[in-house]
Image (cartoon, rainbow, N blue to C red):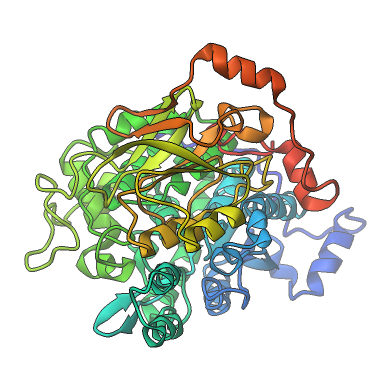
Length: 566
């Protein structure tokens, strides 16, 4: 049973509407008058509006209009919105470069910034708007730390591009690199894909990390129903944003705080939904981090336990055929949740930002997918009988690793290790045809501390797919993968190489086995041999000595714990 107890907090934040002579709060009110407060406004709830608008990425380029709509909505509902900016890093633009090391760091910067402003200004509530991959978990972490009434608004997904009768996403462009390099498509096609892959504003269109995390937010009851799969440029996204502002005012009035919604059962609901829709491996990392912030016990073993009886029944990219707007068209995340609820796989009594429970939100919805479509399959005839995110362990990953098994004809491989100390070295080997069927590629020293920043390996994994080697080559890393990655890949290997994890000890040609069916990741070496190599291993020098990356490397924990910094 879910813990539906509504927790209350001391009402320390409300400004008094009463103005008395010599009141020590007069200077505070004087400052607020300068930004539009009148005498009657000081008794209203003051709401932080964390605005992730940025033209640095299409994921966030449409958020400005949502922020404006929410501000109006909150004022009309009786609140006083105070807007402040949050940062974003475009994963797609920084992918394959040194800049990608800042992506996961940005999650912490976003969380720290929102927490700092809300604490510093003693805000009564928070409405956070984000788009790109790290916006969602960054906001979720901040909401959990603060434990004030809060709602998240997703900026929305991009609509698919088109070429030659096929839907395109950003992953199409990454895979085109490998296809063109392998001679599988001509230059004209390569250029056409690049020009048409991203037609407008919104986050990457498949069930990649942004749409995965927005879906997790909705599953946990931290966002309004249907909001996670709406297109950024559609008017319903603006209407949903305005409704989110009104919902937040109700939460403030009832003093329902975020941790009342972020119980263990809510996290389990999110994990179930992620498994059902074929979501990103990054969901493991981010949900662990959010649970840590909310002080909810959650581990890698919980993901493995829940995936075993959660069918994967939505046919979404990267390994499937459809994008998030297709899922929205046939019923969105509420359809997925209703199907799971009817199957006894969802906690229906979890509270949500609507003021209703999960089951109440889903009441009256169909429990079967619509006829005449195959975006969402019947739950008893799924794509796969089990969830696609498997937790692997073995002498290469004593603390665990994450494998993504969707879209594969085989979930195991044993082959010689091909060792690379950086993503760039590996990418060059793939494009130069130095990687062959049967190889197990190892990219190490790319973990949270070693990278630092735990880069996503989308470029090499996409190049492998583009070369036609997706089922023939394995890849393991202590870094991460994009939500757009698929293939025989294993990431988040812990402990990471930089701290002396077994990944640091393997050598070119060692025989490595990836077996998602038996949850095993191992190298054919004895414990004695691994210990002998450990005695001669020397820790590498930090790649950064100053600045944000150096600070992050000193603070960050293992990927098995969510790569948290507190």
